[in-house]
Image 1: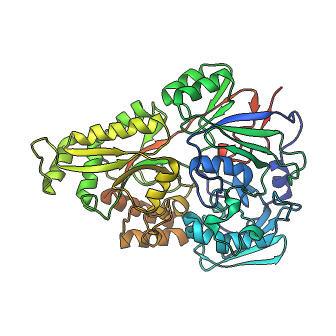
Image 2 (image 1 turned 30 degrees about the vertical axis):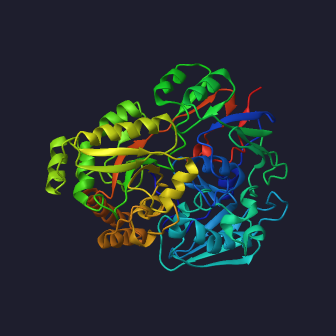
Image 3 (image 1 turned 90 degrees about the horizontal axis):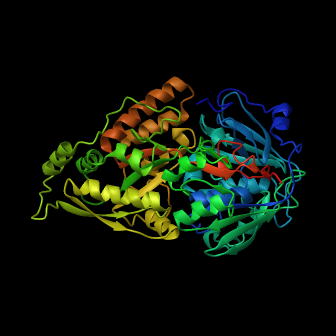
Length: 527
């Protein structure tokens, strides 16, 4: 994976690049409504407050970041049209697009950027708080210029401005309010090409074209309907019958993907997830017994058959994970200890802990909170239950909806929990947040919710983030991956290759490394 352009030395976006990024209207057809699936129904569309996949997908049409990223993770213009970096890597200057307005007609200015980064995201967005922790000042010398000053170099800084990482928030609506209870959370106001028209709970979310969008002639679509279809078989029927045109993530059962690949009416692609690098795991609450003992966590790893999970749960649309860093993320270290399925090793570790079997063969009972994302995840829960049961770990399955799952994760209200998280191309952006002690923040999801703490891990992640040489960063990340794989704060399962399936009449669906989370400003339907 290529280095994000401009991480070292001065970066200047040329006018030619900006022009190349602008979508030509030639051959595109204006009008039409796109019908897509969202599963599960998101708890909110306020992307700054919640980054569940459905929120990102729909919120990415309403909100925007300063940058987006091509498939090689090179930064591209978003609400920023150009940027420069000082030779010492401590000052970044962004020039904003002209004529941008919020959906309520108010102008988008540098004051909104300053508010978003220094106030809003610092309070409610764990990943953004980590990404911008090295920023000492954010200045707005004029309405179209923003200057970030860093206390130390941060090599992946330009990767911090994707829409879910740093969605721009309207200062005039949120400043001085309780962000989590602001009424605007129900009727989101962004700068994107689409606006919320109607949300019929349990049925659909309807977005309509923003006629005042700052890119002339865009978007092409009149609107988008995101249909809430809880049943996986019904989602497949809806796609096949033409009721919906687009599915993504886990919408279609993975055993059905081959069937759609063989249908001439559909395109199937695994592209568009490059920036995300999704990795699934079992999260242990490291604060409570027996999860506080790494021997138990290692025993779980040896008891799991992750090859079976790859082949029979994900039907080959995944890769067995070797540790905390995905193989598609920079500085992945393959030379870590491995955990092949080995029930004897698992039982020996549990014996060493003194967890003897009772008359029913049960050593300990633990609760597992499943991820409410459909049948694939339900089958994963059952596979985990059966696998751990073979070594005397009785698993009691728990379930909830998406909002409840997020709340329980944030409040550490679990024993074991199934999750997946995305990595954003660099360990400093999407991996460290899960393991560093400073990110143990109760009440905020997607932080170090497991409660794992290791001073050496903290030190290595800190050094890697500020190192300016790739060789140094690689050495730090290699060492930290080896430590984490030995400690097993989480049980890493598989790297997920989600399929996006869409009717061939729909064009420009995947145009960047964030895929279906993009604005869809250039999506059009052939009539």
